[in-house]
Amino acid sequence: MILAERLSLYIRLTRLNRPIGILLLLWPTLWGVWVAGEGRPAWHIIIIFTLGTVLMRSAGCAVNDYADRHIDKHVRRTRERPLASGKVSERETLWLAVGLAFAAFLLILPLNPLTWLLSFPAVFLAASYPFTKRFFVIPQAYLGIAFGFGIPMAFAAQLGDVPPVAWLLLLANVFWAIAYDTEYAMVDRDDDIHLGIHSSALFFGKYDVVAVMGCYAITLALLAVAGQMVGLGRVYYTGLSVGAGIVLYHYALIKNRNRDECFKAFLHNNWFGAAVFAGIALDYWMNSR
Image: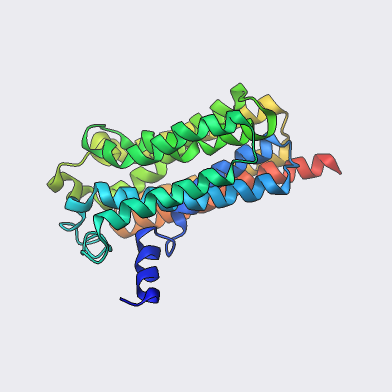
């Protein structure tokens, strides 16, 4: 196989052709970067955490496909993935994941020891999440911790400490992840039942829509408290109001549990994360003028 074809397979394996996962991981990381930097984070911090997000999400996708290699081949949506279809070997997949994680670790070497220390649970969370679907009834909560661990790392990198607001932002991200990944799980509900995989959509059952809306409400409430803790003002809360409007739009999409509409709502979460980030960044910018 020529190099271009092999690279194409690796891009599909790491989902670089589907950037929604990168964005859902990047937005909360940038929340942490901007709050910890009081709206003026150094450029090298922004670059390190942005590239680290891409690398770790890519590594996580490779591990996910390895964990699900015997399942994906039985699901119509996933059976053509490079590993499930046999176009990429298990050994290749693992080595790619290790290489990407190592590259992410090299990025943080210029930072302080606390950031290095926090990178170990971050890698553990990313590597272990795909396996939680076998035994944890709401694996989306674990995903929220994994996807939000860049927040305490961002505070550690800039402050040498992880204050309470960092953990509050992480908790907000957990509830956001439960909300958006339940929307995603509503798409795969029938396959998950058939394969015996746990998901929040199955756990919540007929109350899935109520649960999604409740998790969004908790997310917004926690973000509002976090804003109070660090002194953010009306521009930030305008961003949260925009986020609340996006949540209402998601309700309109998922209330009938149509698979295509649920998937559309999942993808649309990029705009929720962006609205929160815009509120943070603009509020700091306005107050610094």
